[in-house]
Length: 379
Image (cartoon, rainbow, N blue to C red; front, side, top):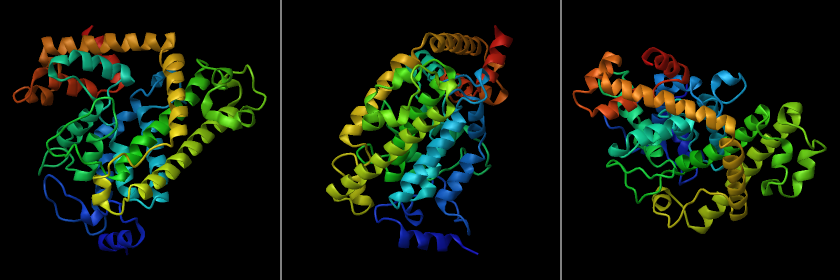
């Protein structure tokens, strides 16, 4: 039988010196005895997978609403893809796969129903409360809202996993008294950031083609295909994604593999160039360690610009965004006018929390279908 101590010893022997060793964690907010078989990061991963917030992601929108088709990504399937890509990257750089997986699995548990449309609406409704951010909400979920243990609130995750949530790359930086904003997070957490982008760029192309909202001809001239454009697209001019599944799958595979290889090469180059030899030099590095190469970054920017203009802003998706706004605003105003419409647990939270914060907690935790059902009840 392999014990936790055996696993920790194996990490010391096999992982890179700048990896996050389980035995060197900065610990938990509420100290606990070590498990005889599982490391701290393995326990974190398991707590996340067994959480209610994790299960709810199955019925939360990624881009296309779950009821629009059984094959489109949901927030949960996106998360699983991010975890898979992250572990592959971590393995190749000799980093801690368990920490990487835990951060990947938890990074979206604070996301709202209806994808980014739901988040944008809550952000506007909470302007006077510093807005709404799904990363900050993810930390709130694991620190407060998940109630599974009598000894402490939340899941009591390790410092490194919680730091990976706080320092997940977004357009709005999150500050938290537990974490030094001047320190880079672990390289494991940084890999999840970029794996998140690798995953959603590729699967949004896949789902966009599958839906017919974009066509192969629309993406053929994107710079990211480079010299392999003709080989990748073959003779599929003028067809939609639904008319040639194998071409679509080939493009998605190539996108994930090409970008992952680029990240590995560039990250290793920066590790060497910046003199990263241990966790201390990693955290104090003068610039980002995990990144695309300059050429790949430019190509990815072009791909993201295309997705914003041609897919995310497509009239059909914008109509769904307006529906999401209507549902979220109605629910928010209804709960604010009559808090007794919320479950008893959230009514109790009103004794110690601002009403807008509690309402946001309740709405953000909803699945798409539950939000629609409640909307029908209160409307």
